[in-house]
Image (cartoon, rainbow, N blue to C red; front, side, top):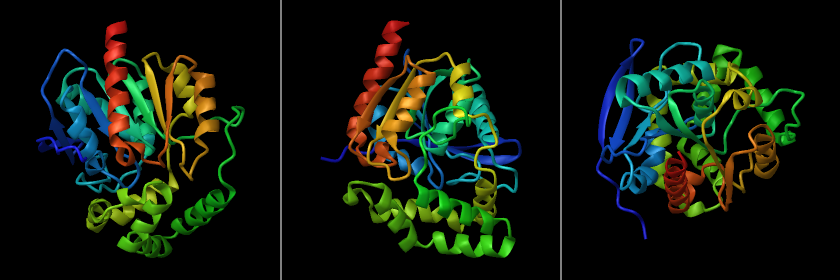
Length: 296
């Protein structure tokens, strides 16, 4: 049975001269608010099922990172540091109190960058978090085929015309669907609505420039192990165990090495467990946030 979509309000916030889209649901309570941060190519739309479930117990916010979703497609240098600053200012200027950040993939890395700085994060939830570790850290080897493909793509993107042509190819709805079907275990979760949610922002002016910039500089910030050693807030890690883009178990072990006090769960899902098994993810988030508040 599908959870009913919670009523939400949507608005734009001006940040450094750019329009940033966000949504809010639920009401303010004594519990910390939740801030949901999407991954590469996604948006606030990817959190619909989580906003619906979690807003029954929490004040829930979701934001489109600069360059994605309904936010501006600015011609800037994209990096983890840029999105970290965006999240920090959003919490300070719009939410108005520290939040528990929940980030998927690239959004997880941006959230980790912020949590490492301290006061804005009441807690951190990472779902199949992106980002690399320093060479001395025992990072699991990436999938060889994926690594080779990534390097080939990155070489192409150094040139404007191949970059534009590649973007036109990968943003086709058929290609979006194929990619989603590879990274979701439950094929029924790959709906026409999901494909449309990812395709729509790719039609915005400047979207191809964002695509090229992100691939040329996918992080532009500290390594995960450095960030983890700077962090002091509670950490929950939720892994889609069937993610073809990363070995969740090996990667989880490395995170645990640098932050042994974390809590972790492995779910029968792919790269986006929050969308594929939302009821399980919502329950784990709800229980964990209530527990860390009890422990304070």
